[in-house]
View 1: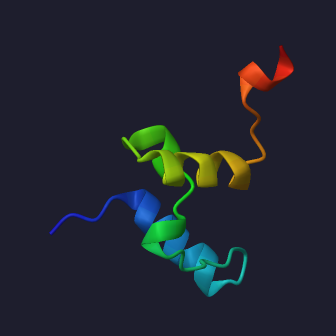
View 2: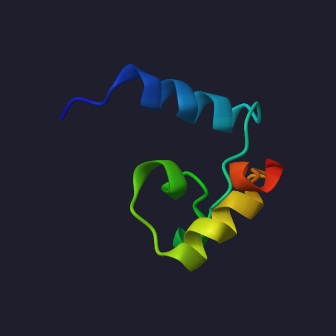
Length: 59
């Protein structure tokens, strides 16, 4: 089975304590706002988590 070289790079960085991987619960994946259709509650939650503002609020 082929493993992409970037995965070996990440494994080495973790082993050398250059980076630390932190588990993020599914419900808290902020990137979902950019990749998935969310209900309004989750959309507003992630907007707030990312420090984004509603453009309508500026008018």
